[in-house]
Image (cartoon, rainbow, N blue to C red; front, side, top):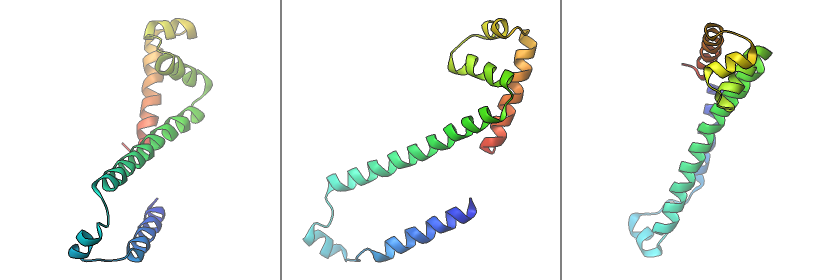
Length: 117
């Protein structure tokens, strides 16, 4: 990750250095960038940041599901994706609620580790 960050920083610096530099007076005269363009650029940056963060979380959950055994994966899918209450998941899987909580805790700890928490 640190190598990727360094590469991105180098790329960002290269792009910034390639942009033409102008004084404030030149920018005002030339109307280098309008408010609408600036707002769109900022909106695009916010969307990119949100996409990036969301993709990180999606990948973390996919990694967790791939790592879990079938029983724990089924528990996560029923409870979190299908919205089943605890008692219904336990009934569907043929386990008691204390086993549900034990499996859930195991999965959540693994997810926390994957997220770096």
